[in-house]
Image (cartoon, rainbow, N blue to C red; front, side, top):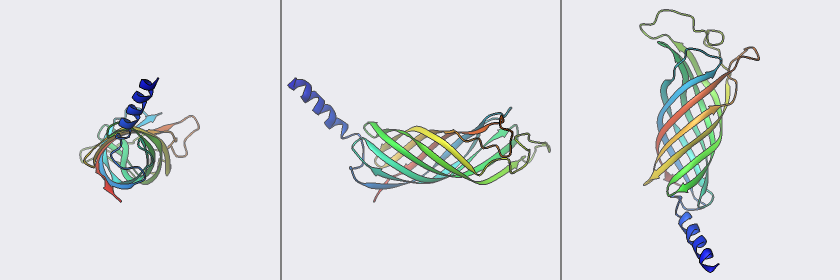
Length: 198
């Protein structure tokens, strides 16, 4: 029994080294990267498009294993239909719980609140004029609010953070569409950031 308790204490002491930041501290992390975005649901013949994501996240290290982050990120999303780009940009506010499952490696899960700041249809220089049949075929086809669930992983080394997450869109973003017509955001996001201790 004493050996078992000793082994448990040893495991817990090793767990305490998982997080890079000290318990009770705050840090801010400017970050930038790419999105690989698409639309799912009642849309056809669409492909993923690559865009930019950037902003900052504030982190509080609650325990040796758990931290909480809140951020503000500008995210270029949407999809492609051949040469036609359907651009939908958001200001996203992700709130995540980070669980450090190994040294400097965290699993992330939370909620993200998105607010549409730009929407347009780019036909490109060589594209023939065509109707993009998304919802209404115009540049105001999507609602201004989007709720998604981010899940992902991050790894830290010397305050440099590589973060990969998937933002699963829950909200039907189709504006003025029939009840049975659903469109959701589907976004992979990869960023590189640097933590500054506060």
